[in-house]
Image (tube, rainbow, N blue to C red; front, side, top):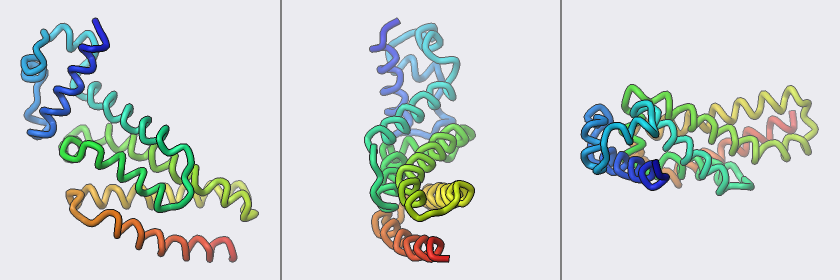
Length: 181
């Protein structure tokens, strides 16, 4: 089976997900809309959750590779928001489904990446012990993840740019105090 078929399955699925909730999409409807038979779908994917996992993981990896350096918390949070908003309706449909955990795993991965990219050089220069560095990274990773989850829970309706900037102002002050304690 060709890579073209796999790509067509993904694109058709994402198109359907932009139009309807995940629980309304069946393999039967997907293959009919895609113009392939069920065997072609099952050749590439075990089920719809496996398809979702591949799509979300590819998107997460793409965001990570496009942000090779993170020079600020704003840049890091904007990378996370890019990941979340890349396919706005589709992501919200996945997020509000029983397959939410698939999305959250990759969101966690993106948050960890951006926080480590930004904080590791700063923490190393700041003279913190390795243990304290790990704690700081975990703290900010959880903050980043929580910020994104809260935004998703609110339907991605808030002004993300303004919120990110203000959020980062608070964290910069907290971070500076932490390094000087």
